[in-house]
Length: 422
Ligand SMILES: *Cc1c(COP(=O)(O)O)cnc(C)c1O
Image (tube, rainbow, N blue to C red):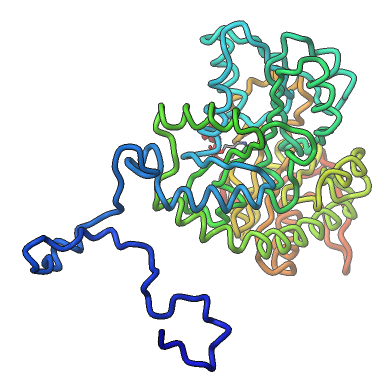
């Protein structure tokens, strides 16, 4: 060993390179000649039947690195990564059998709603949509037949909070076999860990906060019970929805900045929520004391996140506000570094028919804001000019005066596209 004494502290490191993991390059031929570079370059990872990595659908070193990292971040014993958030929801719900019963919310992500509806019409599964913000309502819907409880909190765009711990206890009391799964996309593991609150499964779209840059699609599943992990892994290997190695690498890179992004996005969201509330709009954001479930959210999460919604009293006015912003992209997604604005009833939730939207008290004029990491003053200036141009407020001197929705008229340039749930 030729380790210089000055770096004795690094003794445990293999500075001479003798203990490096074996190169995937094939070993030299027996005739004493070294293989040519073209032969060595063409090697991928080595693996064969029975070894940890023999085929990428079944397992890949980069995907494993991401899964181990995610498990740690999610406070889970095991994490599995798949090709999208909906892919994760598909893997989880594939363990259901005809006759099984699912209890879930009435303000679900549109894609989840669509998948559950398909399982209901094609898979013989009973799906009960209830107001999951009310523990007694959930309890009344639970029975020994309940196989799965599927929750989302905060919901989107109504920003309703669901008591993860209370519902998990009630579900396990109703049926020991019941699996409580929580869609944690709106919070990310940085702000909320459903497994710590009693859930059996946590999953989320890695397309949103975990990636942070809208440059990949991914879904993550976190579990503590080994047996559940094996069932999900079986589905992933059988259907081939495991995350590709390159996307796994990209997600490993994106997640490095989750904390700084989320902190900044959340600070911007809090300031915008206060700004809108002080101008007289009805704002939904779990960081506001005016949110009726502020205490519940605070008890189970470490922050309010970066998604908020507000109502203007008029669909036409909301459309004009959305169309008048310049910094906010008009888009259905969230979790990226740039700020987005949308009208859920015209965009992400357009696939839910108007009658159902009404039944679920989804206001047609609701505007959703997903805050990015831009400069706060620029964001407030942009929103202010949009409110003025749309006629929602009038600037008198230094202060804004809110105008009643029915008095406003105006024209703007950008158009709100009607986009179905992606
Ligand atoms: C985006 C989203 C999903 C689906 O994730 P994809 O990666 O787009 O498939 C699921 N749940 C929630 C709450 C989401 O916002």
